[in-house]
Length: 163
Image (cartoon, rainbow, N blue to C red; front, side, top):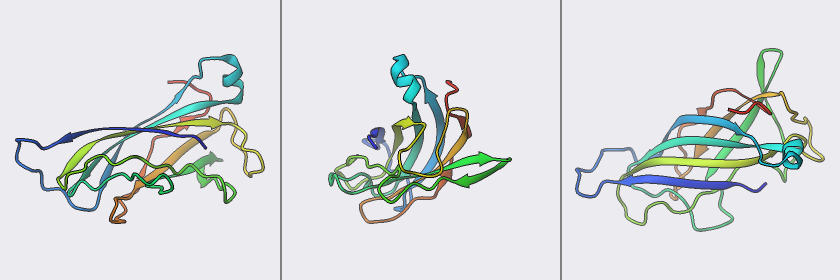
């Protein structure tokens, strides 16, 4: 699955260094369904935009290794009032990566925005996701030392309902 991940961040420069844990901490900001520009793309799916903020005490977030995943996403679908995990086959998932954010070994904080082209029907997977399904996401990140952040949960979004 193609994913776009961007980051903005603040470095502590001349200010006193914040006292953040070396284990990354993340916080939910937003989850939005974005309407595709053309009707052909709209019939196939939507784009989802997930936004989180982060803090990390030694700034070792991101990876230059294109095979390393460091942005982990689980999706849950609401059925009969309860959320249940959506399980893809072994070759499909929503995990992604983001590039190195800070070459210095200093505290860092900022925002990660992750865009996902989201087809309604995933070929050869069960269960299928359809327009009108209510979903939410569980997100975590890891730093280059392998420390995993807390896991956050997004608000509910309805596939096909644009913000």
